[in-house]
Image (cartoon, rainbow, N blue to C red):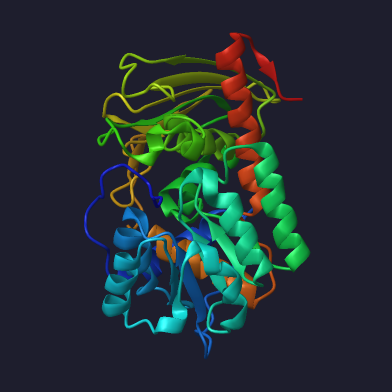
Length: 374
């Protein structure tokens, strides 16, 4: 079984003109994020091997690779031979670029592959990241990083030992509307930040899918789409929370026998900023965040989709920067980091920070108490 974001796909892929324009906007939007110039494409693009050929790889990541300047599809890793044959035919991949999860050690013998993009279920991320690192490959791993703090640390240690970079697939760090909202908050354009509200949820379908099995998912919607709302809280505030409290509910106890159906949580930050979040697999229509200040507010709605992100401000202005391919942007950025020997803005440590907060959220659900993170 293989991983991928599980909310509906949005619109078709944008044109290269829009993608390049949006990439430039994203690079310039935030003074505290390194500004990487888009130099001429290298003579040899970095080869990416996709580990897991599910919905996300099929419909988003592989097509996005065709739009990148610094990357190319150079291999696949799958446990399904039929998928391997289909991908080989579609992307003209030779037999020596096709691997199973059990043969990942042989990646070491393929110089055409530089990066392994791990897109398998959450509970398998550590195994596949560590295998890729031991084979001498850089790793880009989908969110959430793993299902426990300890597994996240193992992934970081494995990549450090191998001397390879590890990045987490936080695609919205490369989305210009999100970066614009961060800029507005940082520069206090609408006043001093006081409160954040963020939520993401949808009505999940197939009851047999791996996301509903705790062993593979690590939890319910918090581990899937709730993490986007958590990320928004953290990068809007620019702080790490000092305490969390949470409540989970489950109405359909058959479908959601292993995981929560819905979850709401509250967080406090060192500056006094408060945040309220919610996520669900039980119903659709939650896809937003808002930031309230002492003089106004800003909001994105919809906030987390692949395309069509837009929002508004209390001063009457809109937030609607150029649409772009977020997956192409994140892969090109990681490739540039590798080529330039620069750190990624979304390292394994960022995924670890999320997992520490999520673990505290689930602890609060279990105990019914506020959990301190300091």
